[in-house]
Image 1 (cartoon, rainbow, N blue to C red):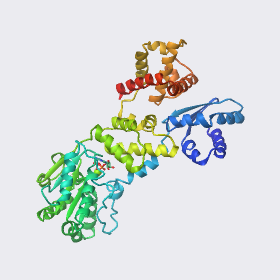
Image 2 (cartoon, protein in one colour):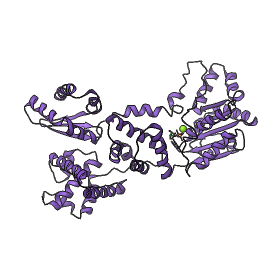
Image 3 (tube, rainbow, N blue to C red):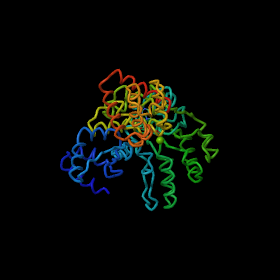
Length: 458
Ligand code: ADP
Ligand code: MG
């Protein structure tokens, strides 16, 4: 069935510069072909625009030559994965190397003795944005690293996923290494600690293990301690390690996604010990902190980030800093790959999957209702064939929004508006997009409707 499209691709390969081909054509996939229509799946709305602006008429001409029939091309955005996915995954893997399973897996068949995890030099106090949500924890971490083994020992840091626990733990390690170069810092994820323990037991290297964590360690930084809950042997070993270090006034810092009392399967004697020192929690950052984190990251990674885009991201991604950063990286990568400017529209489109997952999805019904209220027209008139402008304009706006906020295809949208043809919907979408760029008064109206649609349905 794709034979026809393969022929088109061959021609396009000759004509389109290879960079553009990779960015725009490769990710685009044929979803269906009939005698008159080819439906193409694209990662997002920009693809359709790109085809329209560049090669659509060329492709249509080719189709006509090949088949002797006119073809219509329709695009369904979001139907195939973003080409950036790979790049982003690679990028995302870098800063979290110490917590990804890959770094934790120790091959049991290997008697080799693995060292502790390496501190990530990027995770410093300087790079950590402080706001009310994390101020207390930051201050405690800083104090512990200024004076290891002082008043905050052990320091127990807890908070939800992606809120900066690993970052702070590394910052403590980095700061200590700078300020107290003689200190031996052991930084390790608790799962890795467990795997190492298993290995050492198996190959009768427990002496070595104990030496390393009890005798040759001045600061123990243990990430994600909740993992050892329910693992008896590991808890036992950790308990003795803890006692040895603590009694010789060595600093211990552990992180956890839960408060000690809430970690199921954690031994009572460990729980009490964690409560000896200071327990500090990190809360999700508030709006200003989220914006500051984004700006900080954008500056560090050389990503141009206008204020309105920062506000858009910070408004929609609230509970996880890792996701916030991930979105910024995604936008930056998209902009630099395609040469497009970073705008709110670009952000919306690139992140539509991320952000929509969190929202109750917006339905065609919702959009029709909101548009009919805004323009004070009846829904039945939006679905009618009446051509007077006071009805056809709101109808086109509604079609445009359906296309923008839902994953529905042109024919599906047409059907929902009283059985209209897909070309009517395509025309509406194009017309409204154009009006929005040419008519600032209308653009304001459109923005207000979009805000209503978003706020009522997220
Ligand atoms: P956790 O260990 O709590 O799951 P991480 O420490 O891995 O979270 O943080 C996730 C990402 O968010 C990291 O890239 C980290 O640098 C970043 N991050 C979190 N909080 C902050 C902050 N306050 N300032 C700057 N970056 C932060
Ligand atoms: Mg972590």
